[in-house]
Image (cartoon, rainbow, N blue to C red; front, side, top):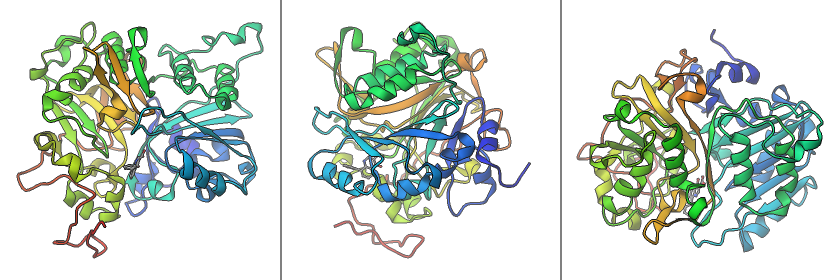
Length: 461
Ligand SMILES: O=C(O)c1c[nH]c2c(-c3ccccc3)cccc2c1=O
């Protein structure tokens, strides 16, 4: 059926994967009517009768955020979890002064250059509780003309009254969703999160089909070495990943909106430590890496110039020239951002996603949507002869694995938005490699040769 749908209809059409993109202003209707949600849809009373909410994020525009809640929910308790310090923290608190229902939790960031990237909504309703793990900042620009991703949980019912509700394992799923979410939130060691830890414990999350992949700042060693970051992904794929021989020739795709300093050569981190984790298969993570085809999707300067936002889209794709010039080896891995299947070739990616597609592009061995960009800060870097994983930032994502969606070895993928019983990727397959004249978007150099779609040049000061 074509035509506008209510949020609950969009939600049920998106099952069982429950992976949606944000609605985009200025594209054809059909690409916003199926498998797409706006923040107002997520917060709609149709999704639940809100009692309280908690928003983990990086950037906040509080007056705009309050307007996204239905009027009758704007006075409900709202906890904002951020990573700001000093002046930025004060500015945020001042912006919230007039909203007496808003409280703050400042996430500890003891590792320099770390940020609180995690984007998650916890929504407590009269009817139960819902969790949304996504990629959009709580600012208007992030929900207007970008490609963003989200996983929306089922409505988790409240657990029946029982004395042993204190043991957190009750009401967990085959993917350990509840325990892993509690472990992640526990890593903040913040008293302001105690009530929300209890809310999670009080709900039956047995219907969650995704696996939590989080990052928390610190040096993780011994039994904690596989708790977060790319070592967490390695551990999960080692346990639940595809059979080795089945995916031998399958590539791995990374897609993100920013790139950190990855070292002077591909062997410094990208094609060794990081690829080792992405390429991990069931039962063994020692795969001959030279045989694995790593493909990276990153917008070209022309993708940005011709985007709906024009060059200003690049203000959210912070790849700096000082980092780029040290790692020109990356260009050979790069592919264009093309999303004709989702009507989003001109909606620049702020989503971050990783997957392992079949050569035919008909299926994936796994799919991950996350806040984590291509950086050591987000994924971690092994130290001390691989005995510890050093992570700088908070990140959160969810991993889709075939076995938890009832299929043997793979998850079927479609490029047709009417095929809603399959997983729809945010971009087109097969990918288009950079040609010789293609350049990655770099945000801190000028572009004065060709104007963008609004007739403007890009002259960063
Ligand atoms: O978590 C996120 O989503 C984001 C995190 N950092 C961003 C930056 C930035 C770049 C260098 C230093 C500090 C901030 C700039 C523009 C967008 C983002 C962004 O979107």
